[in-house]
Image: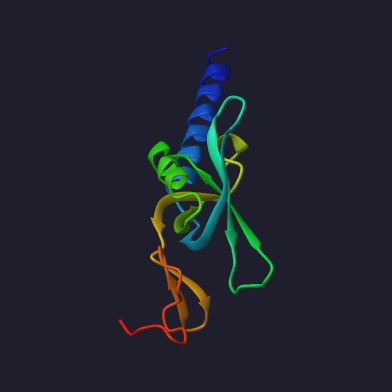
Length: 142
């Protein structure tokens, strides 16, 4: 009986160690920019924030979606405040998590920044909060 209990405790310790390593170590990290179209608090037991970011490289091109998870409540609140604005999301990709209890995606957002300019075409940007593109014909130099 003692050996069975020791084996179960060792297995539980290994499992907990694996989860800690998987959450602490990042396979990759990066930035994605676009517009957050959806952010919802999901899960039966383990609640996480799940969202999608619409990525548009050029006007008129097909929209690609970036699905992400947010575990930090403060970051989720920042994203909700930035809804409808172009944002840049910093994420870390976690590989090897044993269940979806930690999040539905492998991309965990850790930081959000509101973009100050919106690219319309190569060399033409629209400063956020204005209606005329910078560098457009007829615009005044800055």
